Length: 232
Image (tube, rainbow, N blue to C red):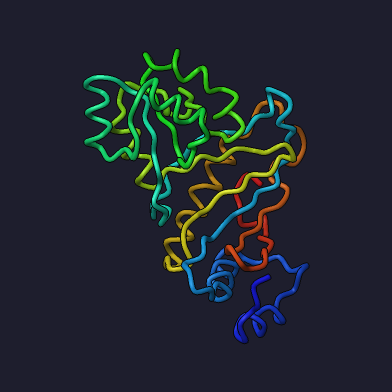
């Protein structure tokens, strides 16, 4: 277990586990607590009043964070011919067809996003059991099955993130790095939260956004006052 620095211990002692923080105060405090030697990721957790096991309560989508993610996103693309050339030129980390499928079947899945042109879905479909559990299966609704591979790669590497409610109805997502300014993190926070609020499914009953918290990779979670979140 990582030991806390003197500064972290001092700040942690000031934290009230039951306190509801304003968004700006939470972001400032989380940044102050992120004193590890590496640039910690600032993460958000949203507890939603949905049961993803029901089709009409699924919450999933993509959104482009205005300040980017600060992360080097690895992208694999299923394409042939001209589209394969375009994908390579656009900065894809791996481009292929059956060879890429076999590589993934062998367990080489070190990618953050998998993109495919529509004509490649016959090949990609064989990877359902491999990519599905990792949330990497290309999907037209998420813009990862598209003839415009160049734009999809640009979006993926330029700050686009996918959000998805897990079994317990919780969404986890990074909104930047501790090195980001408070304003940059706030812009990303608002963009992601607003996207999730707008994605409220028809089957959601009662209170939709139940809890929101932010933390750094190595830091404690701070609860957000939902009064600041429109639609919560």
